[in-house]
Length: 393
Image (tube, rainbow, N blue to C red):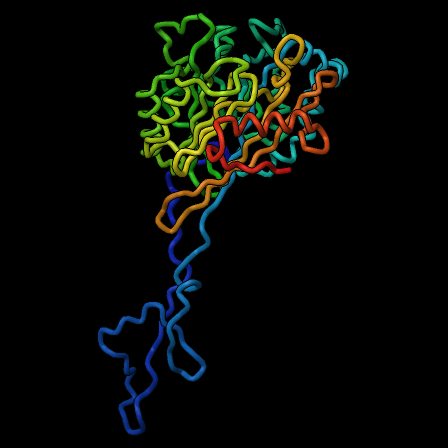
């Protein structure tokens, strides 16, 4: 798994794996016994052979190294309604235990070099004053379960970020800190908000950025504008630029955006995604908030997943649309190219929440075919050729 918080500033491209040196054979009988190396001859890429002569080294083995590659996993919303909280309390026998809900998907999360979750709701510092919709406050043990399942960091900017005010943001980040989870999107100080969130993914420096469209009408305090990152394209592009300047080779932006329960992205989402991916400083855009899986799109060599749905919640029929029980684990593999650019390949695993147990299941054609088919159709909702991601089953 990724080493969260590692300092990537010292990461450098490795030197060529082999530089071979060679010498010339002795001259004919009677010649001088001196070294005999030709003045000025370039012996780069030459290797000795048994006869004492030299031959050209195979350039594919002598001067190249395997391309760097890593995989990032992102997931949908942790939206902990009261029925979810009560079931966790039952699993724990009087303490909150969310790990049974995540056990089936944990091996998928653990395969990633870097894994991001989306913690949509505030966390209580002591499991008091807990609440669900519309003003959330969730048990702190969800942080323990997320860390144990293999996530490395969580985005926290959402329309519920200010449900418990500045104290709620501080409590949430303290709980993530306690279990070693990185975080981005909300902050306790201007300095924390301005510090790029950098991660080491198999030796590659990756920056994680996160923004929300709003906070459900609760104003961000004028004297604490750094509490929550709001969507503002010039600001996002400036942050991405700063992350690259700080050493990031890849910048991933998570956006809490779009219309709830709408599986196609809005024009605003598509316009914002285009502006972000047109920048050389943004490499991947992942969306949350809609509570259903939304379409995905490949723009040039890069991707935007407009909405990853709900990972864990109590949403579903008859209160909300059936697809609100669906989510998707998105795995993006980055592979370095000879020219220094990065190729991307997307694989994804549909998920489905059983509202009787709140276990998050992997949805496959064999296990939960209706959920699987809904998610595949949603991701390809912008039409043929718009998205070339491949389901894992």
